[in-house]
Every structure is written in structure tokens, then in C-alpha cells.
Image 1 (tube, one colour):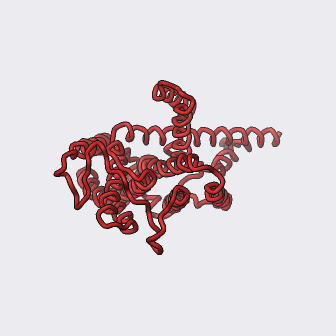
Image 2 (image 1 turned 90 degrees about the vertical axis):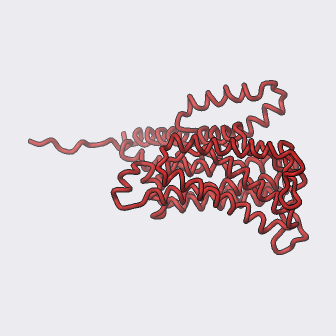
Image 3 (image 1 turned 135 degrees about the horizontal axis):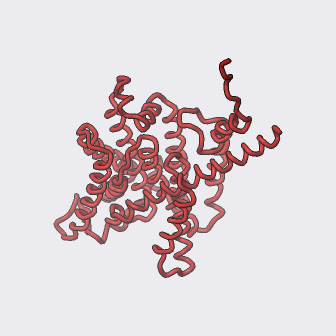
Length: 362
């Protein structure tokens, strides 16, 4: 007599559904549920409600967290959903900031320089990505090449200290950077500049739009192909898709998000410097993504907030070796939350809910 199908416990049946119902844990191919939209709306409302009710120092701290979260989000999208680990996101971050600085100072306007400062790094990414991706460079070498490009750009910028290194009327100033950048002006009223609270509003709006846009993109046919490439690129090719074209498009899109972060960073500090490109900055982006969880979109945002808050907090309380202490804390995070903070907490909640339902079934 053939054995019948194995019966699963209610907890085993319900666990995947419950885990998928936890924020940040739903499969990318599943359209956002109503509660996701509610949570995004509530988070947006809180962030937009805060600026008039907090002091300038806190506005600055919150702004830089949101701006850097965009940079982390660009890497997470590329790494977690396409399978491309790009150490070169800081290259596009720095190029965006420097392009805005040079264009805004030369033309005494801010709207179209900000847009151009996003498009130029995307064009650079298209050229660089074409030679790497269509040249069938392996994933490891792609990571190395993007890191090398970042370091080359940093060294190149640092070597422009002399008075002969001028673009239009703007000196690059080498390692001293370019100070005195103009604040963003309203496109419909060029006489009104964004103050600290205005930059916070803009950073909040951009982060929400990019986060929601990427989440909806993953539900589309294009997004599903990207996830398929991450899972098995050869199978995608055998199904008739040109995986190189999809990977290049994702690479360029991630570069645009990183460039947007660089523009906002330049506006936030009214200053750009070679440190935007350096190895320390590139490593920090990887840390933010790992801490939050690269397999989610909300993870990098949470990771950036946690690490930046720890950095600011350790500096405020007078810890001498901030880097050492922060490194130990991050090692603990990685060992305890191996999949990242958000996925690990999501799985923990899913298990607790599963146990609760199993107990109720008894």
C-alpha cells in the first residue's frame, strides 16, 4: 500500500506565510500588501512631521543618515537582488557631488546642475559597466575593478591641488576639496534656497521615492529577471534573455541612486572632498548593507541608521578609539545576526508566531 502524503504541522504550513507578512521579508516577486503601504505612509508622515520639532543639530544628523541610506540602498539593490557586489558605488557618489559642485558654481544655478550631476555618473557607469559586463568579467574581478576605479578617482582628485586644475572658473583644490557650494534653490523660485530643514525634507522625499520605486520595480518583469539572474544566470540565458543587458541596466540605475546621494551630500555640507571616494567610505557602505541585511531593501536603511548613530554616539561620549570600538560592535552584529539585522529579526518573529500558532492548534 503506497504511503500517503506526509502531513505537515500547522506551524510548518503557516511559517512561510507569516514570515512573508513581516516587513522586509516578503519575496521580491510578491506585490506589496496594504499593510506595507500603511507602514511606508506612517514612516513618511513621522519623518515629515519631525523637522520643525527638532533642533538644527538633530536635523543635520538625521539628514546625513537619510542621504547615506540612499548610497547603501544603491549597493543593496545591486548586490542583494542582482548578485553584483560593486565596491565602486562611492565612485558614483563622489562623481555626483563633484559634478554638482563644478556645474552649480560655474553657472550660478542649481536645478539643472543637480539633474546633470546624476546623469553624468550614470553615463560613466554605462561605459564602465559595458566593458565589464559585456566583457564577461567574473563577479570577483568586477568587484575589484570597481574598487580600483574608486581609488583611481580619489588619487586623481587629490593630485589637483595646483592652480592649473580648473574647470571653468572652479578650482578643484586637490585634497582640500571645494567649499562654498550653493544650496539648492526651488525650481519655481530661484530666490528661495533650501535651509537645513529643507534639505531634511528633500532627503526624506528622495529616500521614500527610491525605496518605493525599487520595491515596485522588483515586482515587474524586469525585476523578476534581475532576481533570476542572481539565482541562476545561465538558466536565464537559456530561457532567451540577454542577462548582460539586464545587469548593465541595473548597474546604471544603482549608479544613478548613488549619484543622487552624492548630490544631496554636497548640498547638505555645502562642500565636497576626495574623502567621498576613499576606501574607508567604500568599506562603510558594505558594512551598512551587511549589518542591515543585503537581501532586503529596508535593511540597508536600518543598517545605515544603526552604524551612523553608533558612530555619532561614541564620538559624543568621548570614546578615544571610536573605530576600534565600532569594529568590535560590528563583529558582534555580524556573528549574532548572520543574515543581517532585519532578516534575522524577521525570522525570529516568524518563529515566535509559528510557535504561538502551533500551541494554539494543540
